[in-house]
Structures are given as structure tokens and as C-alpha cells.
Image (cartoon, rainbow, N blue to C red):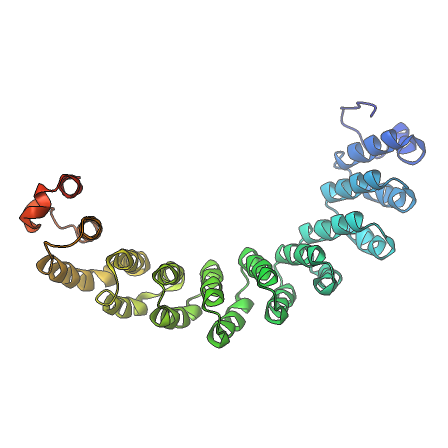
Length: 327
């Protein structure tokens, strides 16, 4: 390249001449500098050269420069050029740039690639649509999710939905979670719903939590519920504290407090008193440490003064458990 590093404008005749008539390295350099010029008029020069440019690497530079100029005309020019481009890498670059534009005008063009045979085209189309905050774009992503048999493709769609954060996705995802027989998919749907942070999903996620048997999946469902739950779910969650293992109880308490600390307080006071009275001196060391961790969390939330006297004597003699009590 020529090594030009100063600020230029589209009116610089030498630069314009290099763009159209220089050797390929000079054309790339001129295209790059025009993209940095912040001159909207440079977009038309770049688009004209794009139609004539024989070197793929230079076409990629031109497209990136049009993106940097960030003009409606520039994006429109790229969308018009797209059907005639044969090189897959250049086509994908244009799709990405059109997604980056966040312009709803290009939804239809991008969405057509969702059903290309090449899965990379599908993934890129989903990513590009996720950048466009528009109902139609959201519906296109959800339709893709509902029609794909592959777990990988579904994951791509869920990731795009989470990035886009459009409420139109909530109902279809909830319905899909209700219908599916794949519990791992249901958990992943709940995590996507958590990203959307819409309380409409809370009842479904709570039912899924109750139906789930795997403790790890139950933790993930509770963490999802934490982000979509409203005060009305706090009482129902408190009932679940009696039916699950200690590690999960920690997650449930954390979710209740996060959702509504004030509403949780009466339930957690009762729960704290019950669990302190029911401590089993013969618990395993791991269970004892988890119980102490849970009680520390409850005392912090409820502003209860800590006392080692509440724990079994044999716990205080254990070097690991006693450190946990003291800490």
C-alpha cells in the first residue's frame, strides 16, 4: 500500500483516481481511506468501484468502508449489488454489514438466507437479523427456531433471540417449551426467556422447575426464573424450599431475595427458624458446610445476628466445619 495516513475527503482527485485506476494495492488503500473520511459523498464512489473491482480482497475493503461511512444510500447500494455477487465470502460480508445497519428495509433480503443449504449462511442470517430491532425480524428468527430439527440450529436461533430481546418471541418460546419432550431444550428455552426478562414466562418456567428431576437442570431453571419472576411467585417458591436438596435451597433463597426481598422476608424468617431447629448433627461434612452457607445467606438477608451456639457441638469440633462457622 502507499502508506497514506492523513485525513482525506472524497474531493481529493488523486485519491479518487487511485480508487479506479491504481494497481490493486493502491485501490485497496484508496478505498480504506475513503471509508475513514467521514464524507457521505464517498459512498457513491465506493459503490461504483465495487461494481468494477475484480479483486475479491479489495471488494471486501470497499464493503467495510461503506459500513464505516454508515449512510442509507451506501447500505441501499450494497443491497442492490448483493444479488449479482457470486463470491460467497463477499456475499456474507454484505449480509453482515446490512445487519449492522439495523435497517428494517433489509430484513427480507437477509431472511432469505435462513433457508440456504449452507448452515453458515443460516447462522450469519440469524446473527444479522438479531441486530435489527424490529417485529418482522423477530418473527423470522422465531419461525426458523420452530422449524429446525437440528439442536445446533436451534441454539443459533435462541442465541439470536437473546441478543435481539424482542417480546414477540416470548409466547412462541413458552408454547414450544410446553410442547417439547426434550427437557434439555426446555431448560435452554427458559434461559433465553430469562434474557428477555418478561414476567409472562414465569408461570411456565416454575412448572418446568417442578416437573424437572435433574438437580443441575433445576438450578438452571431457578436462575432463569430469578430474571423473570414477579412478587406473586415468591410464596410458591418458598414452598419448594422443603422439597429440594440444600444446594438447590440456596438457589431458591437467592431467587426469592432477588425477585422481591421484602415480600420474601416473612417466608424466609419461618424457614430459617425451622431449619435451625432441624439441623442433623450426623450430616456429612459437605451437607453441613452447605447448610451453614445457606444460614449465613439467610442471616444476611434477614439481619439476624450470627451465633455459633446454634450449631451442633460435633460440628464445632470438625476443623473444616468450624472454620466455616467462624468465617
